[in-house]
Amino acid sequence: MSHSDIRPAHTPSVEPAAAARRAATMRAVVRDEYGSPDVLAVRDIPVPALGEGEVLVRVHAAGIDRGAVHILNGRPYLMRLAGFGIRRPKRPGLGSELSGVVRAVGSGVTGFAAGDEVFGVGRSTFAEYAIADATTLAPKPATATHVEAGAVPTSGTTALQAVRDHGRLQPGQRVLVIGASGGVGSFAVQIARALGGTVTGVASTAKLDFVRSLGAEQVLDYTAGDLATQAHERGGRYDLVLDIGGNRSLKTLRRLLEPRGTLVFVGGEGGDQITGGLGRQVRPTLVSRFSSQTFATFWVARPNTADLETLARLIQDGQVRSAVHRTGGLSDVADALRSLEHGQVSGKIVVTP
Ligand SMILES: NC(=O)c1ccc[n+]([C@@H]2O[C@H](COP(=O)([O-])OP(=O)(O)OC[C@H]3O[C@@H](n4cnc5c(N)ncnc54)[C@H](OP(=O)(O)O)[C@@H]3O)[C@@H](O)[C@H]2O)c1
Image (cartoon, rainbow, N blue to C red; front, top):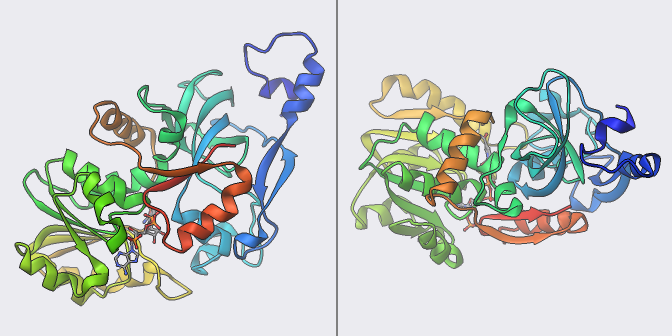
């Protein structure tokens, strides 16, 4: 990429060489190996090169989601085989979500221009600049700050696709969101409400008020005993169960589900080191054929402009908001990831590089 590619259209022509030199490097969170947050450092590295169909964004905010923890420690190991690098990470950077301002566009990009405010999914977004495919960006919702918009892309897209596409929620249905206090769950509660569901959220004791504040009509405390027993005391089974947190067996989850209900496996920690939560999805796929209940497997969310636009509309209409636990700079990313691993976050932490 030439220096002029990364200069904004409105940069004054005085001292262009000095401005370009400054813009050609950036601060970024990097690592050379898989491991704990201790392996992270903030370094000056070159601004990434722009390719065909790609957009260079000055990152104003980047949400931290669970995916960053997995990519940091390289587990489950299956993901190493899926292209992240077998022994060492192929890419030193971390982070997928962003909200920011377009700095330059690659060849073939028609929908975006320098100066546009955008949000979406990019690569190595815990940095001052990041590259995103144009197909995973959308205009930032006008009513949201960069911090609010930066919390949305991966978590919000996952929640939307889980509720609407895999869960096929119909108005009036009863929905159980297991993991309602987390990044994905905080959006899933609100999206399910927006689509006409009656929502019960599951979280730990200290986060139940937070889940109520998102719009859940009822809450269940997973630390207070068997969920099915608690659910049956509060009105029975659910038409749709979103399994986003914990590591419950299919048998346990089926007890929460109406005979013709749908169970969507979104994620959950504590699975085996090789396949993680994905291994749990194989058996339900087979059992689903012989059951009146539907078990929807949700391998990975697929970010795209249309779904980001839907999320932006829900935000602008006031039906969905980002729950931002706290913000921090690039040097706070390691601590933020530790907080996430230890279950100390309600909603999302957002980095402002
Ligand atoms: N399929 C996909 O494409 C996709 C995309 C994004 C994420 N994911 C996966 O989805 C999962 C959630 O991601 P996230 O970003 O929302 O994570 P997160 O912010 O860390 O949230 C985790 C949630 O799980 C809850 N939880 C923890 N232990 C639990 C238990 N034993 N029973 C019930 N709930 C429990 C937490 O509740 P408390 O905090 O109250 O303890 C919290 O609400 C992760 O496994 C992630 O890898 C999958």
